[in-house]
Length: 215
Image (cartoon, rainbow, N blue to C red):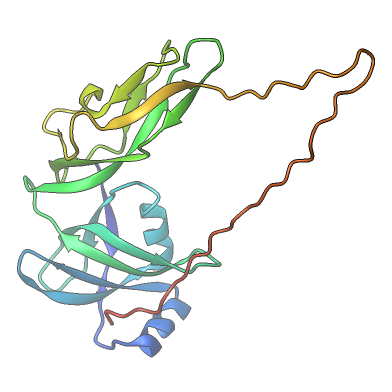
C-alpha cells in the first residue's frame, strides 16, 4: 500500500476550545501513540486528511514531527454526525515488517447463475493480519456462476501472500439464496383478487458525535 504524506504539526493547547479553534482553521486535532511512546498531540490539514481517509486502512507518513517522520495507521475517526467532516483522529505508530490486525473490505465480483437466486452477504469486512506496510485494500470474492444453495466461507477466500485470517475458517462470507416471491391470490374470473392492506413500519438510525476528549 502506498504511503500518503501528511504535514503534521505538534500542538501544545488541548481541550474543547483549542480543538474548535483548530477546526475553524481547517485543521483536525489528532493523537499519535504506540510502541510504548508517550501520546503526542498533533494537528493535521483537514482537506488532505479527508482525501487520504477515502482509502481503507491508509498508511500515513507524518512529516514535520520533532523526531522526524513517522508512519501511522488511523485507529479511530470521529466525524460530525450532520456535516460529516472529521472532528478528531487517533493514529497508531507502525513499523516496517510489523504485523497488524485490521478489517479489510470484501468486494463482490462476478454474476451469479441466472434464475431466482440472490446474494445474502454476511460479512462486509473481514479481520486479517498483515504487514503494516503491505495491507490489502480489499479482498475480492468471485461469485461467477454460483447457484442457489452455494456459499463461500472464509477458508475459500484468496488472500495475498503473508496475509492470514483472523476469523474461524468456517465463517460464512456470503451465500446464494432463493428470492422470496409472494404469490398473488386468485380471484373470480374477470375480477381482481382482494388483497389485504399491508401495514409496515420503519425505524431510523441516528448517530452522535462528541467533542475531542483526548485533547
